[in-house]
Image 1 (spheres, rainbow, N blue to C red):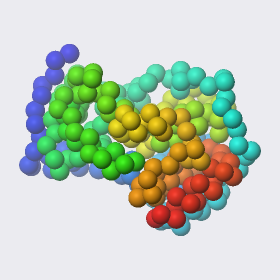
Image 2 (cartoon, rainbow, N blue to C red; image 1 turned 60 degrees about the vertical axis):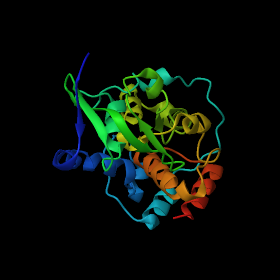
Image 3 (cartoon, rainbow, N blue to C red; image 1 turned 135 degrees about the vertical axis):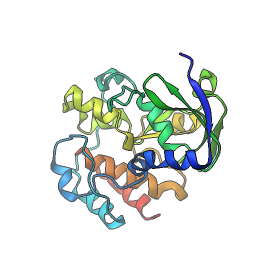
Image 4 (tube, rainbow, N blue to C red; image 1 turned 135 degrees about the horizontal axis):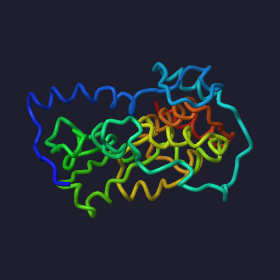
Length: 241
């Protein structure tokens, strides 16, 4: 479908920024950090933010289990249709994630596509694991779009091994499309991280605090388990805060 394309800047940009404040906060804030949330079933609700102490408290309250190996029963399809529009705003969750994370202090281009009013097709993003800027001129071009995949901070396969295998289909879909767990990244970074957990992959030290904070927050929000090796790795990364 051909959309209406326009560059957004100046006052128009400032007006639109408010719409996405909650999205950026969900992506970068501390989510699900109440210690009690680690024992509640996943329901997709966001919890109050907290301090670095709260993150460590949440980590301490995660249920510890023996380290599981890869689960041959895992299938991506178990988490529903990729980027399903679960918030019913007319945009796929990929488009929502791109719109939430685009650098709005730099030129970007946004268009309306059907009911979706924020299809960002050009702009600059920052890979949160490397700090590198990612600038694209036309994400409707599949070759460009492939260079900015959407990462699950806690990978779906990791969630499956640590408790999501017992969830309902609706709970798995909610997890897979939760914007707090979605992050645009560089293709190379996404490939290296892949389905690894925090014990198997770390970003550079400069970015470990933010990564570990989000990782713990998501695990706490969805009552996912942790093993001792992963817990120790997360604690070490939180030392960078």
